[in-house]
Image (spheres, rainbow, N blue to C red):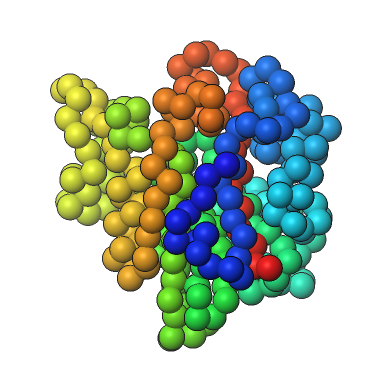
Amino acid sequence: MFYSKSLKKIKDIKHCFFSRRGGFSSGLYKSLNCGKGSKDKRKNISKNLEYVSKKMYVKKSRLILMHQTHSNKVIEINNANLRKKIISDAMITRHKKIALGVLTADCVPILIYDKRNEIIGCIHAGWKGALSGIIKKTINKIKKKNYNYEIIASIGPCISSKSYEVDLSFYRKFLAKAKKNKRYFIFKNKNKKLFNLRKYVNDKLLELNVKVDHINRDTYKEKKNFFSYRRSTKLKQNDYGRCISTISMI
């Protein structure tokens, strides 16, 4: 389990970037696989989510997860949708005693808190969502609640630039969006670049006047601590687990 130094100082919230340890799954999913979209046994995922709920001091029914599709869709959790299927890649809420959760396996989990207005949020920021504006949309949704805000964000464990090799068509997508995006890529060879997703996400938050800290861990390299889509693909495994990151207001 990993914690943000900034968020840990705030007594009114509870949060955690969970590792893959401490759960009930086995094999490819060993051990705290929280991905309902994986091929893991349903009973194991359920037990893992029960474990996370207890650690967050909420009922399992009040641990809210998203059906993530690498979109830029943000949903506010309220009484009307609390028990409905949430199809989005970011959530915010003012509700207390519920935990918002984001699932990742190389993508960036971001946990957010607006201290002035008591709003929590989480973002699933893969390259597609980040490029299409998921971060800006989420922060702006919080800002619209009140012009007076103080937003803190913690960027969790994700794939590092050393592990994130991409082709030239990927590189061109980012340059087509903005020429300055060139700074997030390092030359590897004439056909490949290395992409710094963490820095890209970090800068998007800083541009929006959000205070940022980091859990600077590489999900690809740290096999004992994290699940990794890219590592599983490279090992020719037929599936992969997902780590969970959560935040709640007490």
